Length: 167
Image (cartoon, rainbow, N blue to C red; front, side):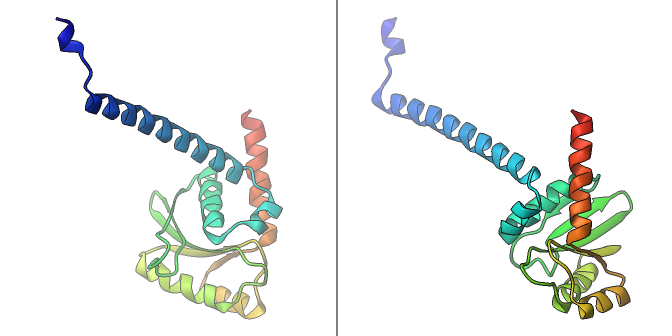
């Protein structure tokens, strides 16, 4: 009867690996949640220090808090869109530019082409900086919503106010 419960070395190793895997998965999820919380609570100065991919995730969270279903596109081969926003009856593509200088016409050109590719209704370029005069002119003539540093800060402040009210 006792022999039925003898643990072989292979079974013991498998059990240890399973427990280790569960522990690692839990810790990874915890680190991910802490990272997400840090990203969500970032101010403009933290945004200025983010990598481009972090800025995209930051915008995803920010836009989700504003009611959009937002997803970050894959890094390469995204056809000019960094995020896709969906809501009933509307799709928006977004080019995210975390720059230390003004954003030029290339970002506007990329998002205009992405609009067709993704069959979007609108296209936006969001930056932590400002736009050059040619970018503003091209954006206006192509009905691209250009969201600069000032408007981004306003969105961030609205998000923080809603967070305080929710608590």
